[in-house]
Length: 125
Figure 1 (tube, rainbow, N blue to C red):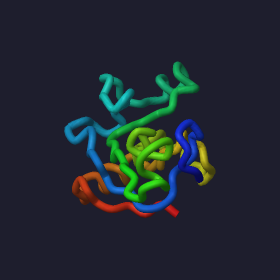
Figure 2: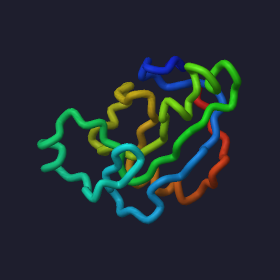
Figure 3: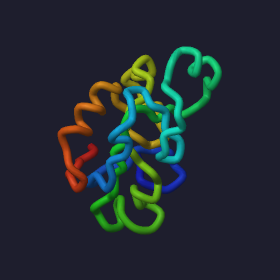
């Protein structure tokens, strides 16, 4: 857990969903820089790109709401590109492994994405 830009830690406190990305993409779609790249995650891609930070299915881009803690300056969650997103389900081990993002199973992020609007508040503890 941590808020400093470049730390690759997950920021704490109150955030909101600033953008929802990937609405029309298929399950397991691969995103790079918030854009679908036309790939669908599978075992072959996993072998060919073992070190890729997989961002799959949907993205909920977060923005900090607490000035000085996770908003503005070198702690700004939005400019750190912190997301809630899908990842290969087999990588979810219960241990921190992301670059600050919150990873979810693909069916779970799809369900969450469809339930909440932009602006939804999120508390990370």
